[in-house]
Image 1 (tube, rainbow over the protein chains, first blue to last red):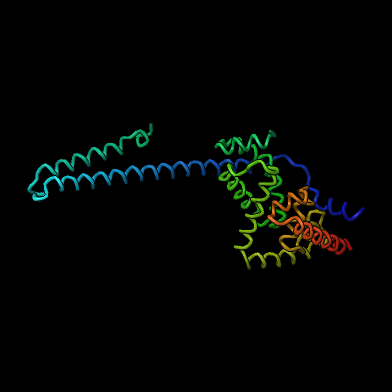
Image 2: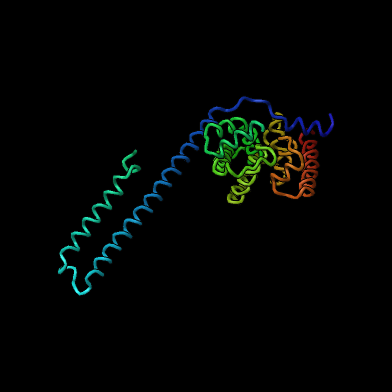
Length: 103
Length: 172
C-alpha cells in the first residue's frame, strides 16, 4: 500500500443516508428564524407608525397653540377637546389597522 | 442549471423547503468536516450555526464553485471564530484528547485518523480534511480557507508529510 493509498484509506468515510433528525432540527431552527424575522419587521413597522402618530399629536398641539397665542390653553376650550378627539382617532387608526387585528 | 443552483436560487427567495433539501444533501459533508476539525466537540452545534448562516446569507451565493464548497467555507470561518473564542479551553481539550488517544492503542482506522490529525495544527488539519477527506481540489480548498493557492499547497504538503510520519508511528 502506497502512502497516498494509506492516507486515502484513513480519510475514507462510509456512505450514509441523510440524518433526518438533524435535517428536522435545522428545519425547526429556520422556521424559528423566519418567525423572529417576521416579528422584528412587525415591531419596526409598529414603531414607525406610532412615531408618526406621536409626531402628529405634537404637531396638532403646536398648531392649536399657534392659532391663538394670546390665549392660554385653559382660556381656549376647543383646544383640549380637539386634541383629545385627535388622539382618539390616531389611537383607533393604529389599533384597528388590518395588521393589528390579524387580517 | 444543476440541482443545487436551482435549490439555492429558491432558498434565496425564502423557500424553506428548498433550503431543507440542500441541508439534506450536504449535512453529511459539513458535519464530517466539522466533527473531524473540532474533534467532535460541539460539532453539531457548529453545523447548525453554519446552516443558519447559510440560510440568512442565501442570497450571497453567486454560483461560483460548488454549493458544498460555499458551505464548507462558512464551516471553516465559523469554526475559526469559535476556536479563537475558546482559546485556552481548546488547548486543555487538546491535551485531554491526546492523553485519551494514547490510552486507545488498539483503536480502529477512525481513531487512527483522530490520532493522526491531533498532531497537526488547525490549518494543516483543515487543509488535509478538505483535500484528502472531502476530495476538494487545491484551488477549491484555497478558496474555502481564503488562502493563496501557493500557501495552501505548502500547507497540504506539510500536512501530508506529518500524516505519513504519524501513521508510521501509530502503526509501529
